[in-house]
Image (cartoon, rainbow, N blue to C red; front, side, top):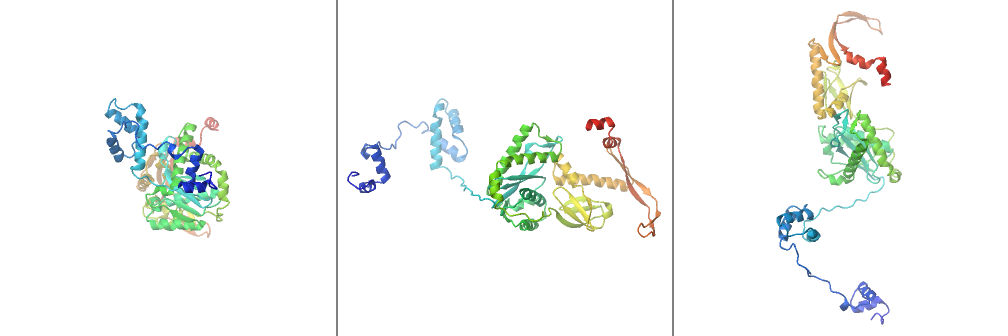
Length: 447
């Protein structure tokens, strides 16, 4: 018929078959009746026919079981019955069962990312990597920022999933980039309010940050980490890269947190070097930064209580006793707190000490805060009682009585009566004096 019709499509149509099927027969130069029939029967006995029901029950109850594990189980249950060469038969049988009768698999839809459209971030715990500072375990997290198109990433060391950590880490990343994406996706916001009074306050302050940079905020549903899959996968790769770099370094111990931070910065620079071309595409479409950074601190007006303490975000911090009864402004940053009075910064609290203590004793920041406060409060009470406070190897604190006296106001020259009072006095230990003023030989060795 192909010889009598104008073309093969017409011939195939008249023969009642698809043109592709007709083309196959013509290329083989064989009639359909001469083609081998498709086989629907077994040519040999199924070696697993009698035990298949047991295997099926096992994989229905435990879908994660692999064919090799099940084969070894069958060999133990039926000694001498199955040879090692039959494992491929069982693997094919289980594969067919899973495709035709097995449980449904989780469906993932591929994401298409456009340059400059989205950045994502989240916190990841790093303590499992065994990083130490002068031999002490550093219990910490990293705020991890990723551009979803180019995979450019940045990281900031932090100690809690707080808004201050998020604000500081996010701004560190975008100012290093020099531009911002159209939208920012983070984990469900409630996961980052470990140290805040309510979720509404977090939402309000987070929205203010995004509004300042004209970025659209997005967040995933609770307990749905896969919705923020870009940064979750980046967590895994980043932590694996850190682990590998630490192995090459030969040590997981650092002299200071600053040295560790520089180590992470150098590693990220290496990882970002291969993403430069796609990053250039993104930067061309991203929005410019505002003139200056937004302040990362949380401001709160509090009154200094009779114990010379201020209470900020459910933590207590000691301040100078001169401020007892005064209303001060506390500015809570990522790693310290500033106390302002009369538009002037009067001091920084012990946050730096707390941040230094809690990573080294493997405890939480809240517990470390309580330890530091207990120590300082005990010292203050002892001094008030007129006792001497001695810290071996550091020095001693005591109070001295100063008699009442007459003085003059330096501006007006007027006479003023200064009442009697006690003033604190510190005497450093010999060890401290030696450290501050080393002998010439030690100084040369240190140089």
